[in-house]
Image (cartoon, rainbow, N blue to C red; front, side, top):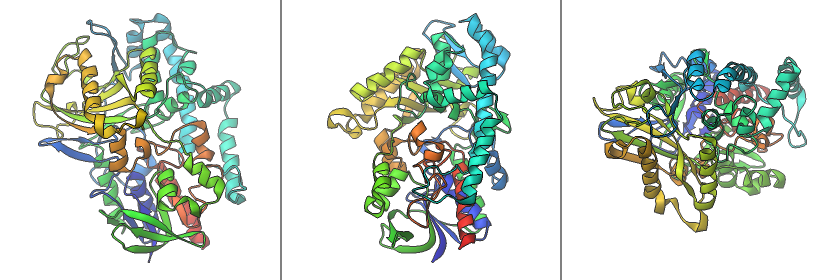
Length: 535
């Protein structure tokens, strides 16, 4: 018998385990794979070449989590990207858009395409920072439970309502309207208030469809845009970074911090089911037949997976069971890593020596119509023949990932349907889809195909099988208004508790959602400890 069992050794599970153990609880983490880290792991996928397998960049990792777990003392080192994004717009020299962290430099770049958009940039950044600042204040808070017919309220819930309201009341009317726009409008409609050039709109609208199986014209994509910019690196908001050694360096540091506080971590320990007795989670049964008992069971897996597979819908009240059956998942993501003999030589920005654009997030998505068409094609055919691609080449700033003179690249690709039409399987077409991605990059950098030494492919189905990402969903559930904040994963259960006593959520399916933040694990631990004190 242990105090707490955590299902899933991803980053949020490790963070939650750390806080619980630091408070004196006996904690065991159960990880299905041979290594902890969930989707934030580093693997050697070809001799001498290793890379972040799924999650691939740093920005949202919460500073409180970094400090409390003392991750830097456990070997974590994060370096900033020198530039945010580079967009090839065509194949002629100069046909590109290079964003910079320096506003004046970005304005000068925008002015090559639109003087009006260059002039509007500071106002846009100011508006986005205002909205992101509100979001940052909510990240480490437990959302108020709305719809307390399903769950109790009490003093803590009333206090959460007051605190949440105060964050918004402090804003002026114009900023309140702007926040409402962000939560309800499409990315393109929101961006149209500042920008007109299709490439510049696409550069920002891309963030609205990252991990989001939707057109940039779809309502709600403006919030996903905001979700990707509330983070920071070393207190510098809006910056993106790289963990030396890949994303696995983050979770290995977290595992060390957890073990240092007495956490037991078991790998190759797949959970078959949650043991439910009289409406309460009493432990788990492993696939090897072992049954483990605990005072609390904490899930770091997608809520849909938890309730449809591990507890079973029969253990739930019908309204909640129906909610979980229909909990929206599927981020339209196809993830690939490639070993390269040389850097891509873009015809719009020639050169195979390391340039600033090689250190940027290289986005293949030259205009808004391209982004929209990729989604429409995926809905009809299963994937786009001209997919949206973000390529990072981390070996340009991290020489631990590839042999000297060679490189590794992460290819994060949209839109690829979670389920293919006409009953087809991703197992049958994954290589064909991967070829399509390589060909797409090669249209802008003709040497790319010939430079690929090896590739590691993860279709949506591969992501589900390997990491337990239901529908390949990197966020553990769609980031839409009906599945955010007090409604994540359902009204009445935004406080990391569930309809089953002693069963909690600590993963990205709880507030504040997806990304390598550590916030759900941090927040869940606070609520779990509160319940242990009541007992």
